[in-house]
Length: 379
Image (cartoon, one colour):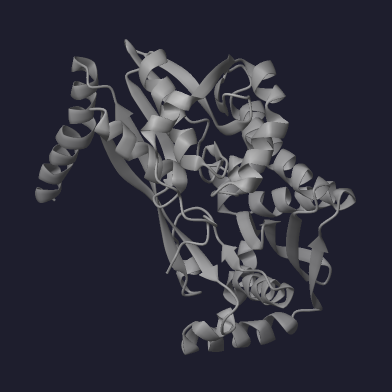
């Protein structure tokens, strides 16, 4: 089944097209910020129209996690100046090694370049500029969809030019295709019976309702509820809750406010006697419900409030005629209960065919895996 996260087939890269295209290299936040209108127009028209590729999402990440960084933005343009595709990277220098990395971490969800309809020409031009005009040893794009246009188009070009590549599977991200039989009916009979029983037990504790927050005026209260609920559980005890990290608070606050401003926010809370006991910090984009963060009251784990909210949200998505529900993030047992499909994502590495590049490639993709395998034999 085709991965719905990319809404069009990625066109083939055409290296010859790079000769008819110029690439502007822009350094620093001011230059990157100036690209926003063109950037978002490309994403909206291209083969990977996902929120993680938008200028606003990347800007939110930079502001939260790398406020002092000077990003390098590349803009591939036709001879007349019309944009074809854009990419943004960060330069890292460690122990004599220069890496160009996508601005991403565990909170960025996925990485795609901003590619317009002629994605093949765009990637060919961007790659030619990286290959010929920038100094680096390793190029790293983390959490790229394996069948997404950036991944599909870039790696063959690099290999054809004698560069070494490698992949590390980082995610098998679950998602549910909607529009056929109801999603709940596709789950195991035992799981459905457990949901019904737990819903009855929860109703015995008080009035149960679903609270929706979609508008800009709802954002602050919805975020406060989410932050408090997530911090009340094991993440708060372990120091990994969003509320305990100012950078994460800035990032999730920004993407929620941006989503509300464009009508894409979809925060849903399951409440018990008016108190939130499970929350989805969700977004809707191009017919897909996306779930960057979720939390539930762990003291009520015996009635599975998170799964009961998941049932309600899926039913709403189906009633709205949405195409898919995307859990985002890694596979987890509670997600597998919903019988999802899985979309593989990789960290994609490209190495220069230099002595340093070859050594780094061998260490990362040959020596370390071999050592890990040998150590596993001794267990």
